Length: 421
Ligand code: LLP
Image (tube, rainbow, N blue to C red; front, side):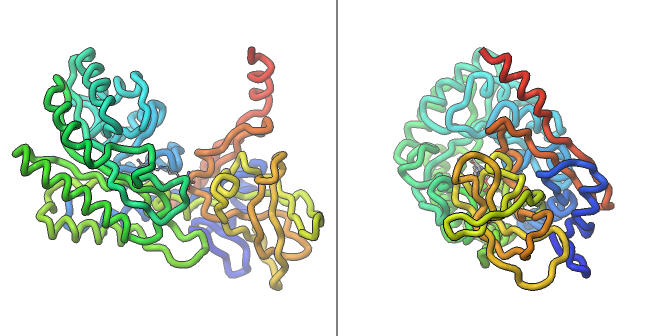
């Protein structure tokens, strides 16, 4: 949890961040995470399901650090993976294959093979994204002589109230099987040799701040499942509602993850589905608020009538502002007095979009700033753009002890690029 000590300095997990940085002896920019608070988020979410059978499959893409994965595994989470590397990571960390959901709109043969070959009966479910994938997955499963558990990712045609780039459940999105195609999908599955339909799934988008559309889509899913069961006489094992629970980036209200779980559990109870496995795939909601990105202030300038604060973190370290126009709160690391003034905080990358927006900060400027709510889709979307190293990461455990993962080596980048071609 990010906070401020009595003296006013920024803290995480109850420890001053400046002291953590000194102890870690890393250069900025550096991510700092409160791993215990992430685990508490998972416990709280699981608790909200009450008597509903459930699997919280943590979306690894949000933050794939081993320490985070292990903490969430300890809290009883499974994993949602979107690539072969994420699947391998989840398995290495010790997530049981039966608690792993494999997603992807364009999966490679290697990804399909690994999903089918994991554990005794493969992963919990490979989510089929489109009709042709049924034939491809069956061919892989036949080649491996193994059965494959599948869930159909349907497109419920519900437009989530979020940024267009992360809304995935409407009829123009590239994801999932249209409702009208479910019959055909079921027929293809019936004709398949190794595929076993265990469930249906949806994922309408990310950073949902209210439960309305999530529940609307859940109703579409439940209706589709009920029709399938009535027509086939089969019983589905799981209903996957996807992830997307939002966090408050400082704008104000946002339904907490527990509210999504409670409302969905209520719907399932009404429909007599409490004993079926409800799968949810949260990423952001478990980790975003419990990570910060610390940057050094390199200088300031006035240009075009704007006051720019120049920091050493860039769009390669935290892409969300450049990609989605997302605003993260930025605060001084040290205690500061007075209201300060509005600064336009920008990074070093040679693009105007390397811009973190405006924030109230002290004047004269502080030596370091903290960019809040950077625990999700921060490091995991970082890149070497401009030849910049990947930032360091510091993991603070519940007892205050830290583990450090150092910034990637610029010399290696240089050698790789020199050797390219
Ligand atoms: N399940 C599926 C199938 C997904 O595609 C995603 C995220 C999740 C679960 C987890 O969603 P979450 O609970 O984290 O919202 N880079 C963007 C977010 C992209 C989300 C991609 N899919 C951002 O920084 O806002």
